[in-house]
Image (cartoon, rainbow, N blue to C red; front, side, top):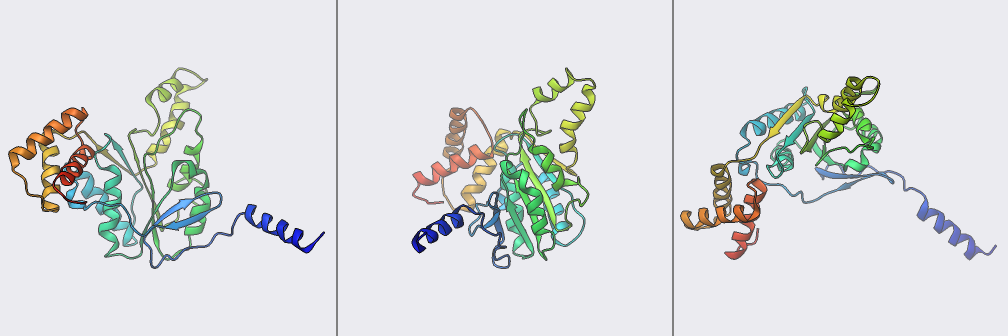
Length: 279
């Protein structure tokens, strides 16, 4: 074999072999994205986060999650949290806003987002974070499970299952449109079959029970919807007559057939663009 041929084999093996995991610069980054196979943490420089004061109509959930996260960031006991309920009402925005509002006061607090499909690798992630001096908020957005999805069993290791349990420097926040993380008909189907249907149902819903905090998000009314838009206008100093603003906002939500924080933000983006603003 020629030297050139051997070098090409070595290069090929290099490309297909998993690269060794390297802990990124934790001191100078606060936000990370977890990737599996190969495992690595990707530092994110600019997190898409909204000012926490602009989140209207969710005051109770906001206060509860903020207090829980402060406790965790200070090294005290805190609960894993499940933010569930109506779509577009600020569940994921609240998690990111809470982290952003605290990270300037507590540089030890880091947030790591992981995808539902990567949950099977979460025990490896926990092993990497366990001995770190930093405190990690693991965040999974839009979490739910289908009939044949076994990833929910992996998630129990993050919450309170397993021999080693959850590291003290790690907490888990998830958002979902489903209170029990699984379709209603999937739970009902378990009741209708099996030797002991109650046991089957208990296994399915036991995952959501492992979250110490359940924060419900419900559809907003029209006054809250308009209050959100007024808050955006004040924040970005967009001047417009109130009657005109409300008329356009109501027409926008009517054409969308929905009313939520997301719809309010989408209307404001359109309004800002029409008025020469770049958000």
